[in-house]
Length: 471
Image: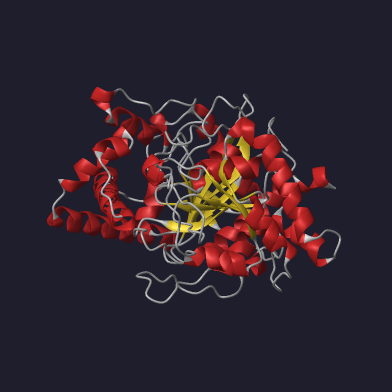
């Protein structure tokens, strides 16, 4: 049974507890055993919480859908009272979170038992998980390659069978990027669907990485809804997302772009993946045609970069408030410091113009989705790249930052517009590396995406595909 658990999703593991076939402590112990066996190869879990998890597993469990199921928190924004939260930074190596974040509290109420925290790049800034403080997380499909970022530790942990699902968040693709790199399902919800962390921006959303569509839907059912005072509120769903999975998506009108914004810069494997996904959608009865929203790509990149740099500068000030000590240059990774310095050069007027550019982009996307239910693109511009790809010399720190734009050409768009989007693992290349297909929906319409995802999962199931490094 212990070996079988590695391949089970969270819903199936919860059912074992509900039917009294296994106790929560047995589930937790089995997950810890898998982590200890596999983590030395991948470096996904950086803060074990085994004693806390076992203590909770011995208690009476809540009447909740995921009672007793082991889970991992990404070590960024998801605070757990009394446990360190490093945000992938040497500067916060010993910082202890004083209280639970709202999302953590909701995950606990859903019955999940947190067994540890996962690796992330410093402050989630880059699309690979190679922080100086903990070292790189390795891809279970090929340990020489990236798991993506910034939720890369969670991606490696779920793909390798350590846990059935794990927390992730997404400010520029950080749920969908590791989903593509690790062969997982990754839903980025609508802006405001889940409660915001106190120090999150308008670009960021919280959710999970899962092996099954049903887990993603059921977890979102438990966590969705803004908390009082949140600046953004997504329109409430018509019914629980779990109820959407058995419903037909109908005959959707799907637009696709084989290379995102520029097919010439997209790896042939990623073009092949999206064309195969488009063909599958057509076979399932949907209307599929080649089209893209009229987005000013240069303005989008400029606005996103301005906000990203400004938020990095603000993060340095947050650290000073949080710890009582302002970080010096040597306390942070060189790229982080450089982005923060650039962020401090942006004036208030420039920031307002960046927000206005976001609004124009959001309106353009909304007009496009008056015609099309879904927009299909590659999730990434390349298959998982070798570790170290985004390294840069001290005299050209932004080289790696610029290189990241080729790897992640599309996913930041939905962070700007606030739309829901998902990476679906429908394709593996000749090297055995997973490549996600990316589907974006109308603002507030996760329901259509979940119905389509369930249909795709049934047509091309992926759960039986396990990487070479698997528990």
